[in-house]
Length: 437
Image (cartoon, rainbow, N blue to C red; front, side, top):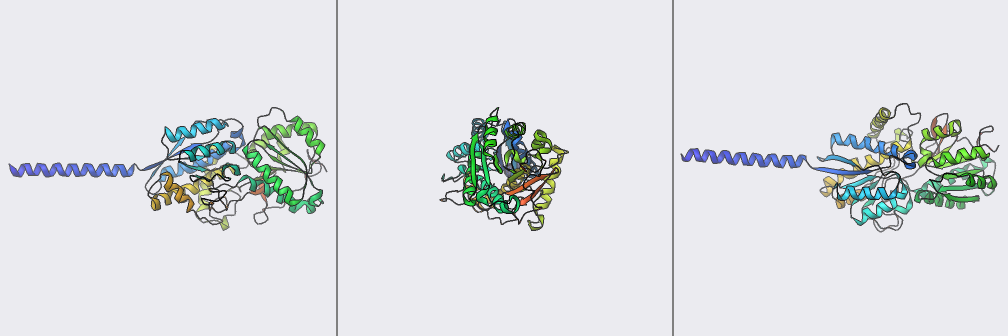
């Protein structure tokens, strides 16, 4: 009798131990990080590049959802469409953090959203990873601890285009920089204002004759008055920062009013979506310049970390399934993909292995440890974040944009020289719609 009772007790203990082990195993398998994802899928920002950035980020998140990271399951929780409205982006971010209990938020296309959302996320002491927006105002003297951006900043965009024109003024326009007439126009949100400041600083450095500087609302229904002012100013080069459809509206009305110039320098956003430019302008999209981080499909793979080219190939194949027949894969797709990949492949594994998990402080410490050399990302640049106590804490100090030009349904890097794939066509050839030749 006692033997039978002892046997039952042993079996009961074994069952209990087994059950405990199964529970522990289940809990270990259930370790996960919930990533809140916020982009604009409708409104002017969607067509300006947000939807494409979303596709790039989602391709990478889907990839890691299959593999996991250091034993953690990846669960992406997508916000309702931010609708190109900062208040909706803020509300969705807070909802994801407080109601959906995500561990962090990722994405964000518009600087007009990034500035207020970053302040709110920092206030909540949560973690934010920005893939796309560029305004320097996100970080400048804010002292954030939990907000990070591998993307280049707006002032770099504005300075880059000015330097490009300054270095080509004599050879291409047969003018000294001081004799070159330039106009700076921009949408009046955080993004446009920030890039225009870089333009101004670059123009001052080059000694250009700035004949016009003006902002406008990206949702303005009519830009004919702006075009009239540009006609009076007679610029050799127009530096423009806008989204879409404002770019299409401006250039359509410029064509109707007979505006002429020597070159049009765009700065990301709507200028990074060639399909939209071509749709709105037809052949006049040829010879337009755009400044953006390099397209991952144009980056020099010979100098790149060898693990990255297969990822670039995968992103391209997945994008082609979603958007077959696109003439030029937008740089925005690669920006979303590359900057998401940096978090998933570098920051997150370190947070788990070195700092014990995925809480905001573990993610923050892991991000501050990031030290990726040039060639270590799909965008070509490296990643090292300015540390706490610096004016731009959280911004990647190793990022940089490039200047590309659209010619015959192809995009080619034309500046800086170290990345150039072809010679720039400057000024606009005689006989083209906007040429002042």
